[in-house]
Length: 255
Image (cartoon, rainbow, N blue to C red; front, side, top):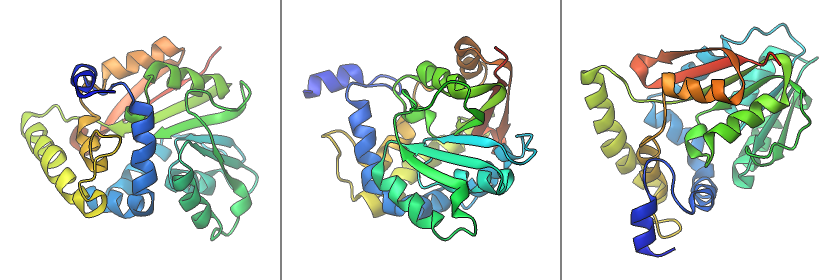
């Protein structure tokens, strides 16, 4: 890809070569991922995950899929909810992120509850109607085809089951929006230099410069909910957290 192509194709959150670039990003930041998430969110990221999980009507013993599981933080919280009779599978395309997740899983009291596998969110390696709940946390911005990713989550979800997705969003309040943009576009990449050293990946951007760019053109609110409805979910709902910095979307698979 030449520079002229990049200038043309980097529009919104999609661009030519995005898949390979994202793989390189997570390959590079895997060892620092958890620490940086806590620093960048002032430790609130754990609360955000809990707020999503509290929306899921667990009874115990469910089979749950955590798509783009990363280092497994969401998967471990899900494991606590399903209990020893349940099963959680975390899937991610980054071997480096999965290595971190497996190291942490080995320290669990019941590590057999959680299994990590490598795979593509756009081609989930599971049969239809397999999981009671399918979850994705803070990953949809990194996927090249949002609608297809949601369709895949719905496909592997059982009829009567639910799909949940959580991601960064931009606050609608003008004061919060201005503060968020300043923090997200200026401070976060600067902080990320401690990890990415300003090294461009795939001749594009340093890893933590991608984070603010990923929100450009990324649908949220009603627009994102429409993607879930178009993909086939029903009874779709969403709510915002921390003044609109994070949004949780969910719906039920009826057919």
